[in-house]
Image (cartoon, rainbow, N blue to C red; front, side, top):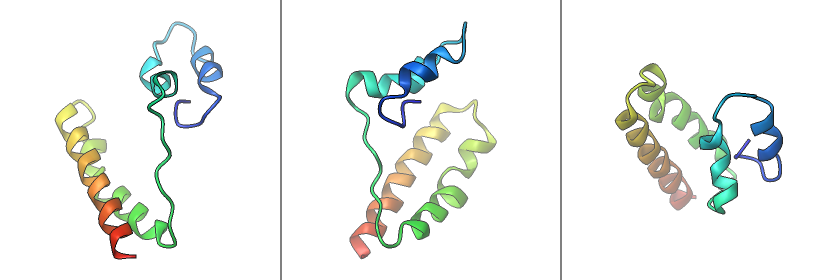
Length: 84
């Protein structure tokens, strides 16, 4: 899917009749980037999974919660990298 370079077309074709462009557009538009990895990746990955996205995952119909979760996840990553 869009999170992995070079597989978006196969991903899009795997679901006939479904619009999966939201997942593949990042590669097509050239805005795809991989998140950083550091010595302490597991520390901030765990924080993202248990803190940042919990509310958004529990209420996926609210786009504002997902936007807030993404902002919080970005802050967690930046703060952790700055502290290394």
